Amino acid sequence: MFEGLTERLGTIFDRLRKRGALSEADVNEALREVRIALLEADVALPVVKDLINGIKARAVGQEVLRSVTPAQMVVKIVHDHLIEVLSGGETDEKLRLGEGAGINLNASPPVPVLLVGLQGSGKTTTAGKLAVRLRKREKKKVLLASLDIYRPAAQKQLAILGEQTETATVEIIPGQDALTIAQRAMDQARRQGFDVVILDTAGRTAVDEQMMAEAAAVKAAVNPLETLLVADALTGQDAVTLARSFHERVGITGIVLTRVDGDSRGGAALSMRGVTGCPIRLIGVGEKLDALETFQPDRIAGRILG
Ligand code: GDP
Image 1 (cartoon, rainbow, N blue to C red):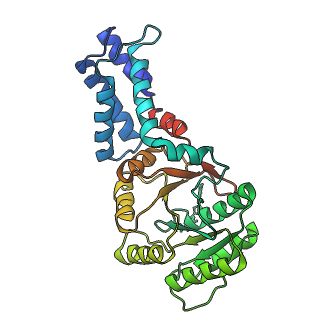
Image 2 (image 1 turned 135 degrees about the vertical axis):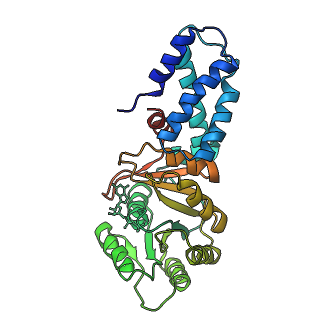
Image 3 (image 1 turned 45 degrees about the vertical axis):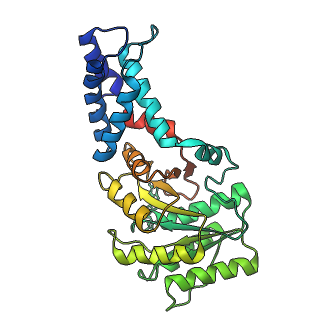
């Protein structure tokens, strides 16, 4: 079983038996344990390095409060730092506290929302969950469109999801390319007064050039307010490459982390936030269509630290 960071640091500081301010040597020794904890939580290596530097800068020279042990003090500093990195500023805060959309919809309707990500990451499920969330909490009229013309069943899968969730989906017209379907969806939304159009793009098993080019072309054509990278919380060291490729080639505005109900420790959240600077907007916490929650940095930070 995983030993929490507090206990591990406790052992170190017991040995040091130190009080007063945290010296650089104390902090370095503690940071070795913090580094291991972050790597065990599957935070990607380059991100771990940045975090460690940030934490060190905060910790050295801090007075250890009377009420806590040095170990508790370091854990608090690490925790605060992780939350700061994960939450990133006022914009996220506003969205979290917002009416429950969890994503930015502040534009005149129809507002396009583009979902990108690898195949199997949970994009289509997230499209359905988001539609339910926006309808129930925000009373939005949502139109769903699958732009996946490569997997024969993909458009049908979204149509079925539409029926299950009582959400409109665009008509399936065989032979149309992704861009044409996206534009058709926007036209229909304008004509029929939809508030939000959720565009579910095709995914591949690995990042490839054609997938990126297609997603970028759709983005340029419809100018979505949100381009959300849907990624599995179990993505380990690959999270950095994944998030960076999508951010550089398509340009994302936020991340939806799926399968947070699994046994991952949530390190991917830190990795992806770290390399893109984009907020984690929502988390998927199950297969059911209501299992979509707003992201709470403190919960993930707690999970990462154990
Ligand atoms: P896509 O290929 O990216 O469109 O992925 P799908 O939406 O088809 O999802 C792939 C599988 O992951 C399906 O079996 C979903 O039910 C499942 N899934 C999606 N999101 C979650 C989640 O948050 N938690 C769990 N446990 N399963 C999920």
